[in-house]
Length: 286
Image (cartoon, rainbow, N blue to C red; front, side):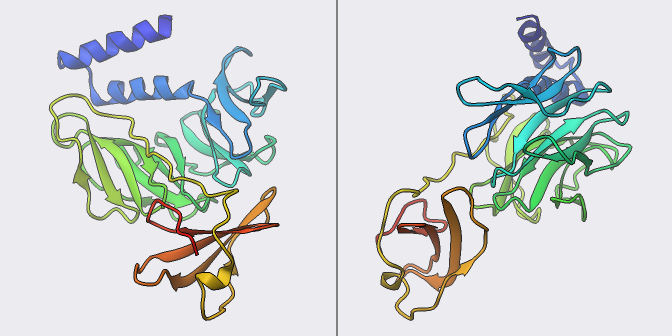
């Protein structure tokens, strides 16, 4: 309750033009630091200060088996985000003296500093294929949206703007990033391609707009649309792109649905085959 009142106070100061950009983004950090993140397998990661400092915990969906994953007495760990394959958690930590992006295995092992930069780095966001992380950084003197490989290599500034940008969010198909920016004098929701091109103001409103979040595409797991040959008349085999994840794995082809020009995504369970047209937002019967 005290935290909520403090956030409301900061926001009211913003409306009077009192609050600076760093303080505004601090508000977003305060809100996000305690937001739970759910894995693909039902476990919930969350931030808690029950041990005297902020730690990343995990628990089952019913609240049982709560466990400290970061278990770090130095500094604070927060903002946990599951990789889409459910194998890793990215999080923010100041254990090295400033905010950095870390990653660890789902059981808390192999905690590693990915950004390793003296500037502020926070708000990690996984790409759909778990190979990249978008994040916000002040390493160029102002807050920008960066992207890097999941191992921390090849950090790249996507926004390259003198204003403040933050809160990156990947689109479900992985081709775009939404983010918040005050480049037009107040915070607006922008979108850009995954390579940083075509940055566009979506909200274009004098009010304060922030914290974008994409609605997920429908998931066809459990719905059978027919055998592969019905969407793949040539009989070309699909190429596996992921290893087995619980009871299903993913395959894709370079083929397109007849007359639609959309690449086909196969989601194959051990007992059936689902066909999903990438980018359409709807299943297509083969």
